[in-house]
Image (cartoon, rainbow, N blue to C red; front, side, top):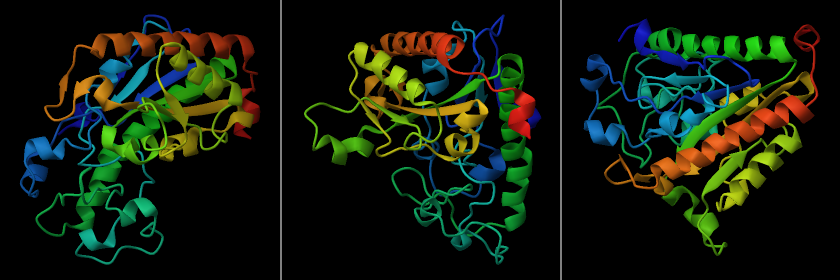
Length: 295
């Protein structure tokens, strides 16, 4: 895999909305050397993938906002983690003390270099070298995060505000426990780090827009927002972040990982969401000077 395999920025003809849409888990490329190390087949390796999420949120382009998407598989490296959130059990060598080896995500096998796929199946035949993990972090993780920061900074400089919309999907089984206490299927989970990562009006407006489209929306359970939302969401500085998790049963056949007849309808709903949030940011969210925010 080369630098061209890391990411793609899909930009509108004119960037009019101070937003960046981020799809870090919809990539599917798997390097040959990685495939030689794993015990799972190609389909199993895609179980953690947010299938077609980049297409699903693609209406953001018509709303005047760019999308950044990863081209490589989440099973290779997970961008929605700290850079060194690693599992000691995976490596031959002793990991440095400053690495985060004790997070709940690492304990579940879902660190920066995942140990398992979504259903808990081990990815690798055995341990791997630390040098390999560090190479992935330098060649894939860091370029992606630099590209995202550059896009967010560009919008913030131009308008005094910016919203990161972090785009994800969730398996229908992920919300089964919560659904047991609800009469309706949970369609969307909005994560704003319990009102810490964006202006409350942004989350409320997104919820209203999706509810008006007939979707059942909850906030922060079971997904309050991952590393992107936590790291980029600083409302007092004019930098907002909202994670959007779409129930996969709304737009794909989860077993076959293929689009359903409802895909385009769901895409239209999310394009409306993008237009709605763009208008809100322009009209009602206060601007904060980029230089003041950087100090």
